[in-house]
Length: 268
Ligand SMILES: Nc1ncnc2c1ncn2[C@@H]1O[C@H](COP(=O)(O)OP(=O)(O)OP(=O)(O)O)[C@@H](O)[C@H]1O
Figure (cartoon, helix red, strand yellow):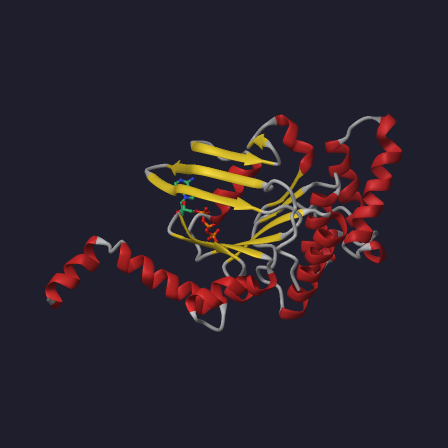
């Protein structure tokens, strides 16, 4: 399935000592990782572990980030990155009272305003509709679409500018297994055909198997950075979910919480 050993040039993302504080909490804790180009990297971990915060840091919308985070050769948040990144948040804005095409026309006009870009915009909208296989639903009101179709509209919006990096925050939440599979096939087609780098988050561990590489997160830290296969082999487990649990147990042994220390002493 994967060509992970191919040389894809410098990584799409490189983080050194990336930390983020939100309110009183340190949400990301001294992260070091890379994300390869033209591959699908899954950011997996339980709810609240910091996935969205990490993604916001990558797209440059997260305040109070320290350390270094290089995105496509630029510091995260650099204006030059704006046209290079497509971002789908957990609650994407799709206007229910507009048709699919009107939604895309609107977002295309925001990205590239002015009459002189009218033809370029129309071509970008047509291409994005084709990319997500919604051409036949172009004139349907977004409010009448199924959950899976709405997800594809959000993805089409993110694809409008032909981004080099797609950042997708839990895009398959609430979708049935068939729609999830279809969406993952679409991610693979985009990465393979265009060389687009995709960073996609999920808290559903079985989706990990669909990624070329993984960043496993827990409690604001990266537990592991590897391919699904290497993770299973290294931990002697059959699934990434079991590998994750093994790594959690190992991390707890290495860095016990004060409560675990107390429990250990009580047993001794
Ligand atoms: N505005 C905020 N102020 C303070 N803490 C916050 C704020 N937003 C999020 N947090 C905390 O930061 C932590 C990480 O949140 P984040 O949304 O990045 O996690 P996540 O892994 O994406 O979770 P989910 O899958 O539920 O979206 C959580 O513990 C959350 O409570």
